[in-house]
Image (cartoon, rainbow, N blue to C red; front, top):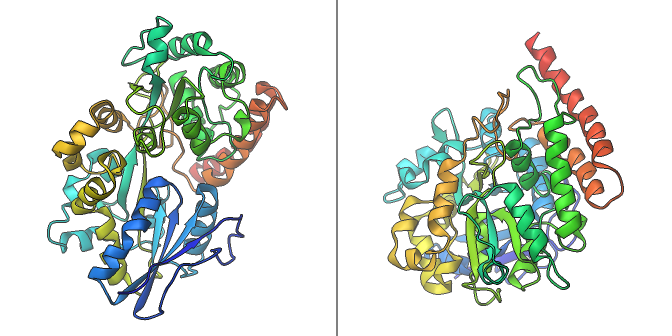
Length: 446
């Protein structure tokens, strides 16, 4: 059996550099399939189970390059966009997939799926499948899918006499946070860490909820409009007044730890967080968490739509073997394998409809399964805002420029969360960045 090589990046890597800091085993035989993967708990589980794939495929040697989210985006984008060819499999999202497919950078996976008995592409949750498709074919397949929802300590709310609705408003959440905030326990945890996939993910859903938008129909930037200013001021005030310490450096992982270790009463973030919160090996609050849909204001159904998915770059020299691994990691049997071997709370959620029919998973997901499914199904990337917009995407804009634009804007927001500048000043600077991008689209329409 081939040994599993896991290259784990522990430091920031240059986008054109070599990834990896340390390896485990590897006898060098057979074909090597190099997999660029984002480092989080579900992906770590996949790496731990991967020797079983190698045992069944002795001619394939897996090499994982595991990176933090921001590092992964930079490294994978640079490699695929330039045809670098370092990776046979890349972990990407519904942001990159349709754009990269249009550029001809990705392999059509529907053709592989159709030729793979039992794979059942139509079992993927429809909104997720559509978001990973281009011209009717899937160019990446979901490892897990997520929306966003509010997570809260049922016991603490009950003790405080607070009843959380299944579809709360942001005002109700803010009121609860004020009542629950106490020494050693923040009222709520919210991301403040820079990154378009960090602070902007939850914040954009708040902007949408408050009636804001990035651009009007004619690509005029709207980031310092009254609606956006109100939304961002609300978010910054909430996290600065009743949020966690060090909010400007808190991302998904940091807030997850806060809630799992009993240091915050509420958290608004990804539905995939249940894999940490409901796992007794990582959480002190198993069974104590309630789940509610993404809070509303002027707009409801504000949950985002996101997937970490696997794609095969056109530059891969071994696409058939790459698909063997991709299909193994995203098929129905893998989900059952995780449940049976690692625990049903650790099953990658939100990808397949059939997952929600597995008796053991239904039992394990009783508190969060239905609200997760409803949130994913309710997300509408084609109509994310109250007023019409020329872009698609709930928590991001599906345009190539958003990686840079979102990063720049997120840095301004994070500075406001840190108290280094006012929300108005941050948004005035963000508006200038957005205007530059908007003009390129206006010129293209002219």
